[in-house]
Image (cartoon, rainbow, N blue to C red):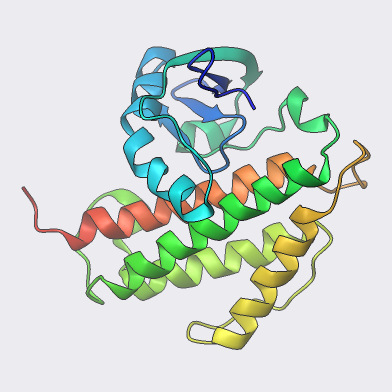
Length: 224
């Protein structure tokens, strides 16, 4: 792990686009934010540490009270996706093999991100406060969007399910269970053609889930 009590540092990678930079914590799937420049992206990442700490707590994984130094260990050339504010690049560190213990940790953090989304949706009104994010989608449309993306992401990890319908609890649970099983599997560093290494898959899935969970939380609140 790159974040520990000994050094108080967090390994971060940057995707550098033409307009925006995305910063992601390599060892904490879902903890990623963007900004207009490297410093702004890192500041945004640090600002979201308290929100991400909830995910780690749900996963039963110790998270530092303070994020410590955000240490940039890799820079990647961004793309149009980066400029949109989303991650889209596989880091070199993602190719490293995973032990069973490391894989279990990834899976637990992804599963915790689903809990955050489910709770956010359950506690939000159907109609959300309008804003620029996500084209102003309301609660159910956001959840449908996440489910659709998740079914597509799953294919990159060798998991094939039809897109679950909103309210299709059994289908959603089955997709998530198979994704967790795929992420729990030890990884020897061999990535199938057109597939994703599990570290990247976990990071991409958890980021998308949490980004929209936090959007629901923010837009469910009255404008301040």
